[in-house]
Structure formats: structure tokens, C-alpha cells
Image (cartoon, rainbow, N blue to C red; front, side, top):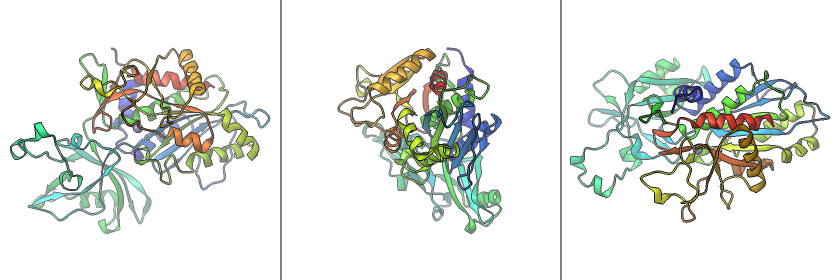
Amino acid sequence: MSRNPHADDLIRFLNASPTPWHAVETAVERLTRAGARRLREADTWSLHPGETVFLTRGGSLLALRIPANFSVRAPRPFHILAAHTDSPGLRLKPRPPQASQEYRRWGVEVYGGALFNSWLDRDLGIAGRVCSPAAREGILVRLEERPVRIPQVAIHLDRTVNEQGLILNPQRHLVPVTGQTSGDASLEALLEHAAGAPFSDLTFDLCLYDTTPAGYGGLGDEFLYSGRLDNLAMSHAALSAFVESGPSGAIPDVIQAVVLFDHEEIGSVSAAGARSNFLPAALERAATALGLDRDAWLRLLPQSFLVSADMAHALHPNYPEKHEPDHFPLPNRGVVLKANANHRYMGDAPAASRLLGWARRAGVPVQNFVSRSDLACGSTVGPALGADLGMPGVDVGNAMLSMHSAREMCGADDPAQAIALFREFLKG
Ligand SMILES: [Zn+2]
């Protein structure tokens, strides 16, 4: 398998984005370079045909491109690509614990459904946003040079671990060691230096992340290895398709949109998550700014379409019994279309049929995924958005292994396939 520019670019995107806020910043840089104009939620909006705009709310971002031939008489529906910027992991508590036995440590909370063991014995950076009286919105920080670590207890002190499994209590066993009290560096001092204010004035949202860079893997470069593939891989694919569908191409028949949400991994209920008013309010405001009345806006919604893109479980060759024997996706075999009769994934037969049409036009193979009937099914932002907007859509993703590990893997050929499919979808 040959390395390809879209996989190379995904690697750059992953390495630039250790946290949801960094991912939004990376996306903003790319959109700005592509000529998009920033809108602010607090401002009155004016929008014009042919324009590309974006707005952010915390770790979430929405970008819209209005077709040049848009008019009130002939409004165009929305074609929306949705993904999420957050990943399961460990987040720092507001204050450090007392130093114990001369070790400096810092307690963490578990964010989302993290695989605890994957965080042990890795070189961990600290990144996120720090707020001070002079910067209430926060500044992005990334402390990578001096990694911290959560050491696993030696096998001599845990003799049955290989037979009975590793049981980790997140309060006691996932506390990173950040240094020794005899050392002169403390996290408090590093944060004070970064923010230019005393520690007592600082608030922060800080994540641990694996400092090992993303890269190719497998003897034939078949795979990509990285943290946060779920779901920065789909955030990157959606954003790339949007940027590549830029104004120089053919005029699309739809209002193109990409929305990247924070907080999917914890259920999407937050002021910036997919259950918030971020997307519905922005779409309605955009429609109003383009001159549509409320009736015209409501008429657009059922004509619009949502592609919710989140990574999918590839067949694990060491655990084939965990997978539905007739619906298991594989890496590098095309985009995965997810189905669930109980609508844990968005979609029905008519919506899936439209997706197959875009895939055929793009020349992208589609694989089906259904959970085993005796295993609980995951979910995504798709069903909630579909319910709030009354909009048809589907759930898709690329196949991956080690989902929710600190270091996951996926096929190196698949980012380009998803981007090709999403570009076709954005044409309308
Ligand atoms: Zn996900």
C-alpha cells in the first residue's frame, strides 16, 4: 500500500490536535487559509451567496458555504457533515493532591469511556486551555517537552495480573506522577509561566495525551497509529472534503456544511454539544441572514441531509466472536455504513439508498456494519441531530481497531476514501 497525501495530512492534523480546543484551532487555521470568514454568535449576521463562513463555540465548530446561485426564490437545502472533536481520556483535577513519599502527582478524572490500561507506561503530555483574569476565554497550552507518566505496578507486586486481569481503580491507580518534590519544576509553576498569572487565579481544562506522534504502521504501511482517531479521523475527513470543495469548483446544489462537536463521548449534553442549540440556531440564523422567513427555513429541513461520521469497529482478528459474522467491516475496504433497528445509529432504507448513490458516483466501496444482536450497540451524534432538525441522514465511519485506547489504529487508505465520498455528498 502506498502512502497517500490524505493520510499524510491526517497525521499532521492529529499531531496538531491533542485536545478538542486544539482541533478547533487547527480547523480554524485551515478554514481561514481557504478564505472562510469568521462569524461570532454575539454579532448580527449578514451572509451572501458564494461566501464561506465559520463559527466556534468552545470545542465545537460549524462551517457553511453558500452556493453562488443561492436566492430566496430558489433556496438550497443543507448538506451537513457532522463529526466530533473529543476523545476519551484523562483530565486533570483543579488542584494537585498532597505530595506523597516525595512524589509529585496530579489527580485525574476519566473523560468518556477510556480504556484505562492504555494510559499506563506512556509518555504523556499535558494540553488544553488555561484561563486567567487577563484571558477569560483561555489560551491554548501544550506541555510536551517533559512528559509525565502513570506507571503500572511491577508484576512482582501483582503476581496474578496475567491470569486474572488488570483491575484499575481510577481514583487510586490512574494518578500521574509528575515529578519529585526535590525537583524544582511543578505543574503549577509551568501553568503560571504559560498564563502569566499566579496559580490561584488560574482555571483550566487540561487533558493528558500520548506524546508519541501519529504515523504509518504495518510492514506495508497498511495502517495509521495514533491517539484520537475516534473521532479526529472523521473530523479531518469532513473538514478536508469541505475545504477541497472550495469556491473554485463547480457550484454545488446545496448549502455545504461541516459541524464538529465537542462532548460526544459523554453523551453530547452540554452548551456546545450535539444536544445543544449550536447547530439548529446557527442554521436558522444563516437562513434568516440569507433572507428566508421561518416557513421557508422549516421547508428546507426535510429536504436537507445529514451525514454523521464517526469511526466504526473493524473486525478484530483475535476476537472474531465479538463481531456480527455477516456484517464486519475491515480496514482499507471502504467506508462503513452503520445500521441499527433501534436507531442508535441514524438512518433508514431511503437515506441509506441516497448514501449508496453518492458512494457509487465517487467510486468508493461501502461496507455494512451491524452490532451483534446479543451486544449493546454504540451511538453517535446522528440520532439526536436528526431528531432535533427533522432531517434525514445516515451514520458512516471508517473501520478501526483499539477504539478508545490512548493509541488506536485504522487503515491508511481509508481517509482518502471517506474524503472522496464526502466531496461527492457536498456537491448535492
Ligand atoms: Zn466517536
